[in-house]
Image (cartoon, rainbow, N blue to C red; front, side):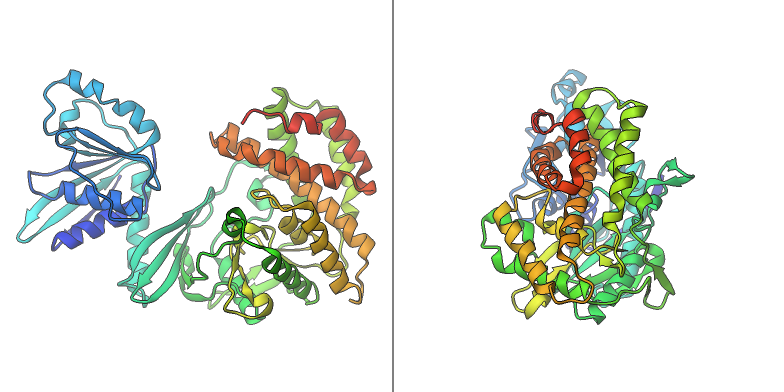
Length: 505
């Protein structure tokens, strides 16, 4: 359990606490607000809900309705007031157990629940103190970790130029990274919250998956990679302040004009995508180091995207997609055949002079910056998993985007553009590059099918299933390359396109 105390000098401070706590909201947990009438429970709950809504929506007190739900907020939330509760039977009618499964629940007068409270909860007791009040907070479960993190972040920001900034939730992903937008006057920046990655279970050769696949362990990767990219003239976010030990940084705000959102809006993406290709051409022409300086903190090693990493990624299709699609597991023979084929294909991934590849060079991680010039108009975020590898990998990521459709004709034109721009580069072989492009497209599609199946089956995130037919179509195109004929035969026998694209959504 984590405990802390906040002195709230006025109503605005109470509202600020509610907005700050909303940054850590998640479905399946409960916040219990205790205090006398007029202690500020509803004020805190209202600011919490409005922060989740991103707007000053009307949040009436549920004194008479007992429960008020908000299903369009960033996290669905249920506001419960038990002051007028008259009997235990009335409590049963509220459906709190069902709400706890799908909503962040915030309860005033929790003493009247008359039952054991969930272990994943935040208790807040508000006590009047002159014109203000004192808030005693006690967190259990995920809220224990959240309170510790909020305290660390507050201490960090107090030492920066952004101590008085308003904090707004920006994004959180399925990993261990979280982002906030900092707003102060007419200026903005981004708070990157990237605590040390916890080691996962040992999966092979005494190492966890993240170590084998060369995934970033901490924020040092971002600090080092971004520093180098900015110095070389690329539009990665600059580092404004950082504290690597706590996994925190204030970085440049590149805005909100994300390629993925533009594509979903139906914007003309010809120019942004062409500039993204030109950026990769420029990167392919440079010599890239195997280590990068961490500002004031030594060096970050940039791993080689080796065969061990590629193997464990394609194995995801065997470990997760096969059982999901066929309700069985591959035999030892079927697994061995699959991995033997990849071993024969790995030479296609070799490159005499490896370059930095971002690995997630696709629409969610590219920003359009029209006020800049040339390929500097392409903003690069989520750079932490950068490795040394073949330049065809990032082209496959860009042109075979798992989350949005990239028209095949447009993708072919952009691939042609890349090859045309590089045709006179020393050492560039178009035939070899196109073979590597097909290889990495198939390797990446295999990995993604496995990841999306895992997210759906293990984590209950079935929304990823809607992307599987798209990824399957990319895989099919890559399998048409003559160098991938054996891999096509394996897929046609065991995981054919008809199966891959007929799974229930």
